[in-house]
Amino acid sequence: MSFRLRIVFMTTALITLLFSVGGAVLIHTTFLASIEKEEQAAVDDSQFLLKILQVVGEDGEWFGEKEMVSLIQNMDLQESMDCLVLTQEENVIYRYQRKENLIDQMTLNLEPEERQVLITFFSVDDTEKFLQTTTRVMLNGKIYYLNIGRNLTPIYEVRQEQIGVFRRTFWVLLVLGAALSWLLAAVLTRPLRSLTKASREIGGGNLKYRSNITSDDEIGTLSEEFDKMADQLEDHICLLQEAAEQKEQFMGAFTHELKTPMTSIIGYADLLRTQKLTPEDEEDALDYIFSEAKRLENLSLKMLDLFVADKKELVMKECSPAELVEYVARHLQPVYEKKSIFIQTDTVPGKCLIEPDLFQTLLINLLDNAKKSMEQGGMIFVSMRMTEQGCVLKVKDQGKGIPKEAMKHITEAFYRADKARARSEGSAGLGLALCEKIVQLHRGRMTFESEEGRGTEVTVELCAEGGEKQ
Image 1 (cartoon, rainbow, N blue to C red):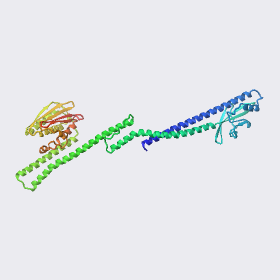
Image 2 (tube, rainbow, N blue to C red):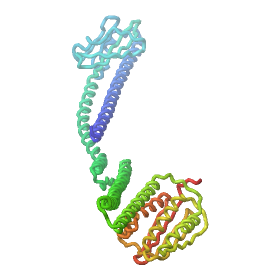
Image 3 (cartoon, rainbow, N blue to C red):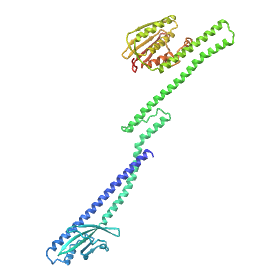
């Protein structure tokens, strides 16, 4: 059963219950009030007649049964009663009835106490209802019983009419209530239908669809939270799609990087195996095999560093970044001088929480990238400053610079702005990807400023938040 039908059913059931109980209580209360009113009127008439008979009977013995009957007849009580029976023991002294068989249905052997009015009920043919009052009269030493009957049928007829009106009104109100409940349910469930449609659209792949329900009630709050959830879901799906695309690009690039040197190695090895070459050609072939093998070795080491950096549990240590910079620069300087490249450092003493091995790997890769961009030699400037959160490292070279169209791709794995030069130097295009991963592990950021022909400056901000101090 749908929620709308449940609302209609429950509302209709509630209307039925409340109206039925309310109507039944009202009719029954009115009926009982009318019966009580008739009972009180009958008691008053009986007591009035009893008092008259007692007062007159006290005047003397002259007041006998004939005088009693005459007095009752002269009091003209027929308007307020439908039957009257005066008895003495089992003898009927006087009887009056508006229609036949009324007195036959009365109970005449009742014996109430003195000054007591006994009330009973009787019916005729199960269609007419009567109220009977029985009182006791003591005159001239004899006990008389006065039985009076009053017709209650009009009260019962009024109740039946009320029940009929109630039933007709009930069915009209039930139909109207069901119709109004249906309209009310349609209005109340409209936001739920919008939410259902939104969930169906999102489930079908339309991640940009939103419910856009604006209200101040609980459904409005639910809609707002649903749309927030949809926004987060869309963001996560986009991230997953981007990750899948990056993984696909990574695997494609990695396969290509492996295929090229392996093809060359296999080709030259087969040439050396199957043909007799001159010493010069044989030396060239061996040199090419060696260079391609070194490139594969470099590729595997970079991949290993990238994998280890991604999986490594980072444990921060309180170290001096200035000392690490000076250490790396001092050990790389002899190698760089062979290509007329000199490293100039400018550091500020201080300590912060970093991972020293990853920090050195980061600096070595940045220096290596700077070296590869300087074919004619030059200067590499390395500066390091302390901050409240950690440190800021800058590496500036005098190389070729990075083209604008390549800036947004330089941290992607296997991406190389100058593919020909990178291959000749054995580059796998993983250095800056590794740097980016190290910076992320230190909760920092890395930015690039470059101009073609004038060099590149890399700024790395490292923050030790989340690290574990040893």
